Length: 285
Image (cartoon, rainbow, N blue to C red; front, side):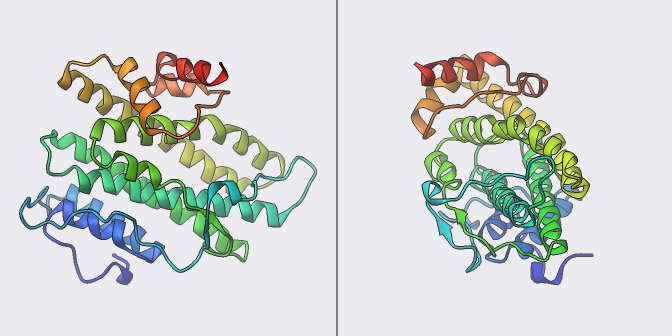
C-alpha cells in the first residue's frame, strides 16, 4: 500500500518520477515516492524518459523547514558513547546525522536517474540506480523510526549542507558523478560504519547496530554498482579507469581522501587500492 503523502499517482516516465522524489520537501513523502517509483519501474509501468516533456531535475533538493542547515565547519562532532558510557543525547545526535546523510543519499541516487535518463545508457544502469535509490530511502526510514523510538525526530538538530555540493559539481558529467558519489562518498561509509557497529554493540544499542549493519551491507552493493558503471564509462570512452578516477577526484572533490581505509570491503565492491591509495598518499605529502 502506498503512503497517501506520496501524492495522486506517478508520472508516466522514470525521469519525471525521479524529479518528483528529489523535489519533495517532506522526507516521509520523499521516501514514499521512492518506494512507489521503484515498484512501478520494476513492474514496467514507467517509460524511461520523454525528452521533450520531462522537466529537468531541480538544482537543489526539496527540504523541510527543519533541520537548520549549517556549513560543515560549524557542525558539532557526533559519535556514539564509549563502552561503559550512557549518553542518549550523543546517540540521538549521531543517528540524526546519519539520517541526514541518508536523506541526501536518496536525492543523489534519484538525481542520477533523472538527470542522466536522456543519455544512451543500458537499461540495467537504471535498474541499478533505482535499487540504490530505494535502499537509501529504506535507510532513512529506519533511522528516522529509530529516532522516534528515542523520543526524537529528524529536524530536531542542525545538519550540514555540504553533501549536495557533489551533485552540483558533477551534474554535467556522469563519469564525474560516479567517481565522486559512490566511489568517494559511499566508499567512505565502508570505512567508518564497522567501528560504529562495534561501538553500538558494546554499549548495548543492538537496535542501532542492526540498522548500521543493514546500511553497511547495502553500501557495499552501492559501491559495486558505482564501480561497475564507472568502468563501463571509461571503456566506452577508451580511458584507463584508475588515472581517470584520480583526475576526476582532484578536479571535483573538495578535501583529501582520508585513511584508514577498509581495503577488504572496498575490494569486494571492485574498488581496488589503486583507485584511492595514490590520492591519500598525495594528501599526506
